Image (cartoon, rainbow, N blue to C red; front, side, top):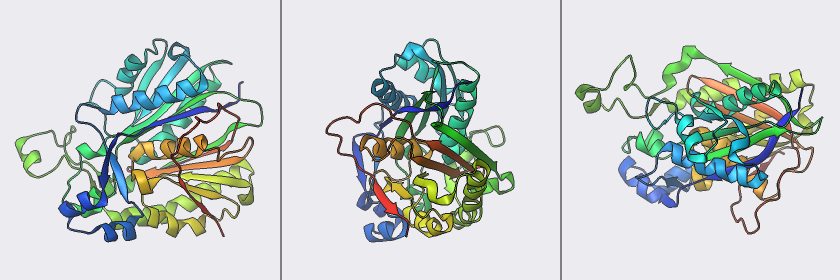
Length: 347
């Protein structure tokens, strides 16, 4: 059975930069308020002509190019998104077409902002049974700008558009993905939602008038959920893997809110770890936030061969997902890449 790990990373963010001043006006707040509450200074917005599949394909292509792998050699494409191109078919099938990955089985996963971690766990298990030399593309992509109520300060200030991807493949023994953990608390599903547009509340003139197609979030409830569930889920994962807290060198979380992450960080008890943040420039990019941050850090050479990397997502459902991996050497970072995450070291 092959050992599966990340062999390349890629990401794509749109060119259009949206400042705090722009979103603050509609939400009735200020730039200073947004920075103080979230740590976010700007975010990106997709071009009107682009859909989620377009962003996803660009991020996936960047990962393939980094690894030097042809699209036809990909066996699976697993796309995590909560803003698909349309209800059906799966957006992953459109990504397969855009890439020319004609041999890949493609499907979507929706675990909201935990989606990338859930998708990676699924793809890793598929590859374990597929034999040596097979590859899977895992992509997280979202265009939240299309579902935001820009008068709602709880949500309008947070989100940006983007996509991130990893290519999974065979890696040396004692490297790669070591353990995964997935948790759902369906009793709290109401904390995050887009109420209308599905089978319970189909689209109608009434749902449009009521704003039922906008993203809604109970900010305080989400903060409590993260504080109550994330530390325990990560500690359980490390204990199950037999990994001491001080062995973790890198923590790549979902980029929900920088202030909230700062509050929960001490409770994670990772004394030698660096927490990687890219939200100051990109905001909360939903299921794309973990792979975008991972790609930014990787292309800057932040990860050394064999170092322990912990990735975590949390979001609607309510869901938590985590992946523990030993970093394997991958393709060289692109020369001249100036994107850099903020690194927060414990202690």
